[in-house]
Image (cartoon, rainbow, N blue to C red; front, side, top):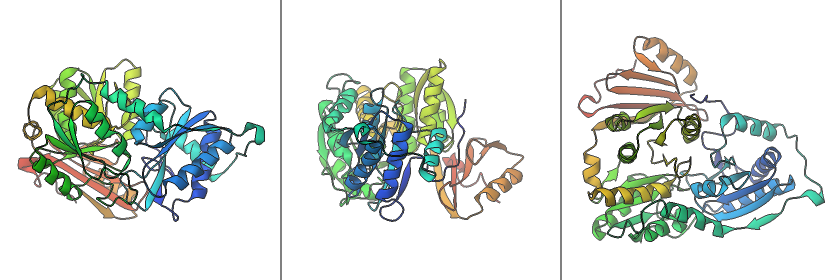
Length: 444
């Protein structure tokens, strides 16, 4: 059953985000903590990325949780997927202070459920109602919660990934890791080292000002990583976003691996090992579907957003379906046998395993995938809903997918138009066969 996408007032696809001191204040984060503590009274795990505002905001969310009677375990600085792994089955919920890929002046809050997934839309709407119409009150002195500091718990996450693979599988592989001065400084180099890799690091010291590059791992920002990969003779370079739930790659020639092709390569490997379903948003390139169908797997599409992918994967598996893999075309990959969330550390480790298993170079594996071209753009407008309704009418004779926005399908190409839920813009993505690119769609 496909998830329904609800319109939220405060939370976006991946939590609350804003400029610190302007859109996101300690007072707001305190209220979020109080609301979460009211909904999920119990033991709550919290963590943060390396942003300079993180310490202030994590104290605010902890204050709200403690005041409403929750016990709090502070896991310190760690990647979002590490916190999600620790929460899974061990805590009653969690809160991660992070703005992911946004610039350093931003921060945010992600709410994690007891199963390790981000809070879904229906529960988030209940949380928002508590935030906008507070109906909670602080507990009296004898019922206030207790706090434990437990940064050592991150070790469990590292071990879980290392033990997922054969011992020392990466012993012949050199990798350059660029954590971007974020929390993956503590995890990905250690994971790959324990897998036997020779690991070099770039931007490997935690720093919330992100002096080496911005938290978004763009091709432009990874030129230094590309140069180090080539000069060191590394098999590949891997870079993370600000909270390390995503991983992007540089091949041994210093070329940026487009994220949809990264997804396709890992999907190809996963589907070769096991047959079943791959889950991904409607915004993912057709290269993924082409590859997994060649491997005998099926595909299920969801609205855009990792939470919809993760929850669909869980639902399918709970209903007896074999779910092999999932993720988004932005480097956010989900390995269901590990956990139901995007995990950059696991993705980096899986790339080591793929190269060690195949004995081939990353560029060779990527170049063997079907060739596709993708264009992404956005247009500022406050008439997003009107635009989408007009597109339905103009392209009524085409095959349309209305899972999220309007997706127009023609032969082996498609165009997707979506209205942003948080900004007055519409986003446009066109995915086409390389030879026909630019000749398939005429947008009226």
